[in-house]
Image (cartoon, rainbow, N blue to C red):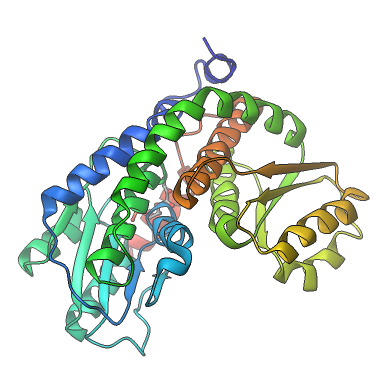
Length: 338
Ligand code: F6R
């Protein structure tokens, strides 16, 4: 039994550890589901990925992994409306794991009213019903996960929507090789996560990313929030060097994490080094991580998997079940009442 399994024994009611470990299988299954949906290729002005929380992050991750390979915009929309500037020439991918998220349903309606090409990724719910009624292609997702644990599916689907909209090349081989790379890295990642979580224990983590790792930093934050039920924050360099850095002059109990990547701009890498040195004067812990992998997709998902494992390790340390998100559900129930 691994240290993480041991730590989560009796706590992990919904199998979050198994879901994170299965990320490589999720990538392969996503490719299969995408192929089964037989999406037609088009020439969109750009692609909007509409979703919230665990269903939105795939859009950010796909845009980061594709990077300069995007020849037109690939943007994530979190909220009730697609941007006023969007025209019918845009493709709109609506992602909602449950299919019941009100913001995403509103975006779907907005995209339909606009006359934009729509695609949907969901397990079912009102979003699947609305898509089927409108003849919109649905990429069906397996219904056994927590929405945030479907991150690999949401990533692959967003990358595919970009390709189907003609805004970026198709990266299926890169996704497949990332799946093999993550499988090989899995044990080492669990070990690494244990070391990092030990250093972050008792701190409020602030996770910094830049370029490729910017959405990974946000993912670390949200996974620590939802799985470990603890406060965590994230920010992006170089922007944070122009404001947030001053806040570190008094930072009781904060732990800083810096996510480095070989492809970051050399000045971004220098900023990471210097910022880490400066915050070390006040931080309870400073953790530097360098992504590993042979492609941007692999390195990005490596960072995501590591962060997910760190969040589970922190859940174990806090003695909390990573699965339930009671506060989020209470809020959704309240909103559902009007
Ligand atoms: C829960 C989670 C949330 C949901 C979000 C949107 O695991 O991660 O962030 O993803 O509340 O719900 P869905 O994904 O069902 O549209």
